[in-house]
Length: 283
Ligand SMILES: [Zn+2]
Image (cartoon, helix red, strand yellow):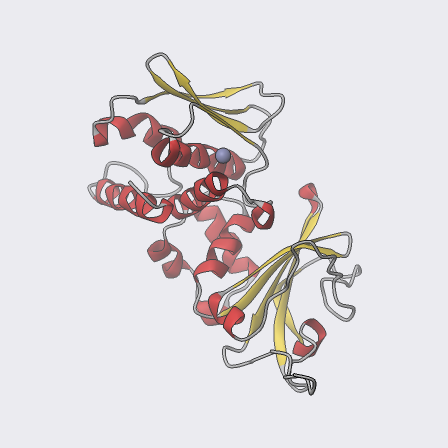
């Protein structure tokens, strides 16, 4: 198994096949069972022998070489089922992709909230594996009407896949052919932003690495009187992208994720709306 996406797709085919044969519900993916079964499926001689919630102090989940194989441990303090599932899938990713490289993996802050700041290649790969395994694209596309996407639709999807809404929204933005940007912000500033491929081509992206990016005034995100706008409202595209056509509008959706203290914003632009800066006279 080489790339994270390939490894996840291979497992997804197996799960599709087994669930069609009526052996179990396809979603949410039972990662614990999958981890325990997988060595038998692929004839690995170093199986995952335990998947356990334990009292972890300094990290959230981990994968450890033990005498007869590997132990997949996660913190008993993780409250949300979606976050726990994502952590398990992330560690399963390390098992499938990286166990010949290290004997100890200790991982923190998963569940995609730290997406933009994951710099370590192995961590990014384990996240990509988890996301692909828990939300296969063919199933995701059946659930979402691309042209009318909103946080309610993504929320229903997240529930079906048993993941957090943030993880489902990220998966959708990374895969869609629409022009869309997902922004995570705290206290009025952008933590990270991810653009769909179409949005990037049209100039709709934010450079947040090593920069302080304030939420634009006039945006719904910056309006503290509106905690939530799941279906979205029209705002002038130039509010978010200063070089957009003056008459152009985009749909802005907003969700306050209270327990984690951040705001999630989804910007949905017209696929033909280009917001690049004009060439300056000095060039
Ligand atoms: Zn990890």
